[in-house]
Amino acid sequence: MKILFKILLSAVILFSSAIPAFSMELNTRDEYLFDVRKDDGDIYRSRISLDKKITAPEVEISAFVESQWNLDTDEWEKVLLGIEAGKTFWEYLYMGQSLQLISGQMLDYMAFDVDSESFDTTTKIKLTLPITECFSFCAFEEYSINVAKGRDEINEIGSEIIYDPGKLFSVSAGWRHTDRIHDFDTDYASMSLSFHF
Image (tube, rainbow, N blue to C red; front, top):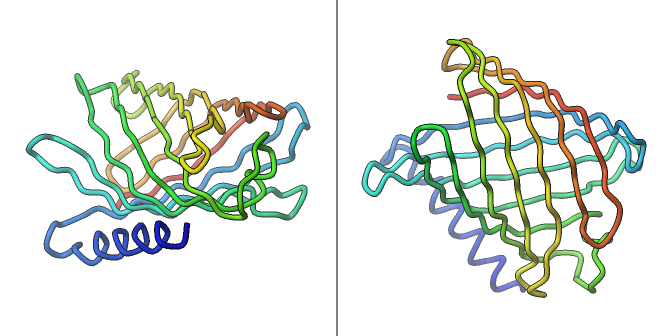
């Protein structure tokens, strides 16, 4: 496990050190999730990513750090360090795959034993449709599998309305359903603020 962590950490460091050579973008997203069913508690989620669009074969690559803090339990539900590759089809449909080191309380919800750290992989599908020049509708699904155990881990689906007045920032409001597969489900109302540099 520690060897895989060192390999992933080295890949993220090498990837991020190449910023000047490959003119990458820095993106941040801070999201507040209101637990509408009072199953788990409100969540604060933050993600920082370094993104690069490669023109041939038109692939998007990201190195990211993501954290999820439960405001009711005062615990880290999830901390991720990973790499993602994806592709956009027909301007509106994004499909991506990520590999990340995961740590936090989320591992306690699994029906199988894992260490305090583990690796998982997430498949992402996102459909974004423009409504007006500044507004768009997004629907998404994320399905994670624990690599170490070869078992499904968590499934999230959701939708949001995004207000994007320019290239610097965007604001969104929506809904998210989290299925922990081997444990309870939670529904959230969400609000987020993203910055793009």
